[in-house]
Length: 353
Image (cartoon, rainbow, N blue to C red; front, top):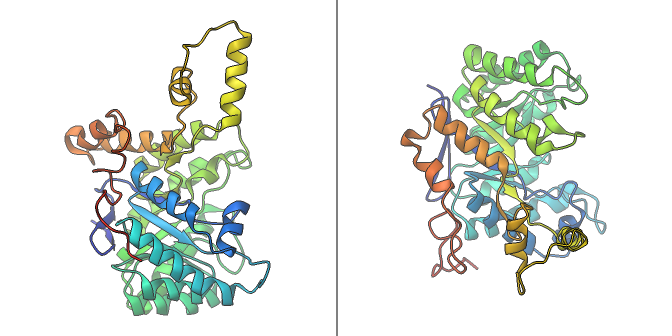
């Protein structure tokens, strides 16, 4: 069986057809997050710290690290991304002990991350474009790391799944020329939005099966792409992920965290409750209120997608006897006990300076 091994200093995550699904947390990425981008340019890493810990507590087994900020003060990413990538990797490694995925379109940033990363990270990514192959595959070989291979090339992203398979095959073959084995190639077959292409889901499932059977490679995807532009995206994602797992997909780059309920949402719900003539208990706090009315939580927690993945792991016997499923469904830890036994570094251990 194909096994792709990624490691931190103390932990190992394995992608494989007979392994639990690997969740690669995507939150440490400033793309589309103006607030985070502004914080990073200002040297404020507080959101990065919160996102790292929250994702691991929610069940992420690998964390994606992307430093793709376009600084207002310097728009050249070749100058700004490498030192920022190094800083973020150092910071995250001091907070959590899961393996990392070094993610950038800038080769210098990829190498900066590889140089500082402890263990054996996943590199994200290489495409079928000739220039990209020549830039990235030597890095993969030099540092002996696995790499995400995205199924697009110099012609762009094809809607034809046969073309996307051919690009993946080309990358696997070119990697072999560098002495990189197929088990260190994790193919992203590219998930199209089902709202724009009705056959997008069927295409991915067929592609994943083919990649597994013909190339013997592990696979990943940007899971939320499938639901882009549609209402109730979590509902679609929750169905898509177990179906993709059933087809043979072994990992996904995704957000494992259900974000906290906002104060605005709480205020609006309280106004609606009062308008309906419902009298709330005196002194009810916000957490009790949102729990009572099914709004979620005021704290970050594992999202519904994680519930679907845990259930699918159990049903496919990648969670023997359901131990992880049972642990996942235990009541949350009491106040002051968050993080103990759930993947973050427990109290008493110092974070590196």
